[in-house]
Length: 80
Image 1 (tube, rainbow, N blue to C red):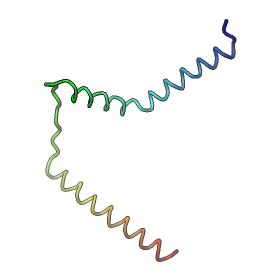
Image 2: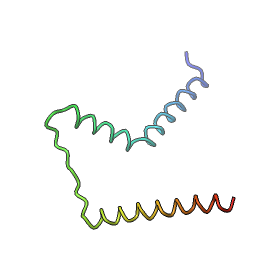
Image 3: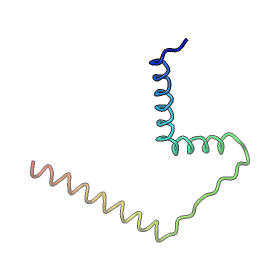
Image 4: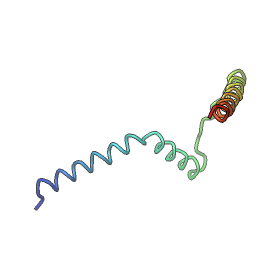
């Protein structure tokens, strides 16, 4: 019926699929939960609250990274 090589290839294929699902488990679960929240009415979804200090820190970090990236690009063009 099945040869040894065919069985080994099936087993290796199963492990590859399992590894792929394991690698993308978090994004898959996020997508599934988004579909559940969208498709089923009256689904409870908890909204997280970010404190105003953290929002300010995020904005400052965004501008700092933008400035540093722009400076790196400018200096890269200057010296190349």
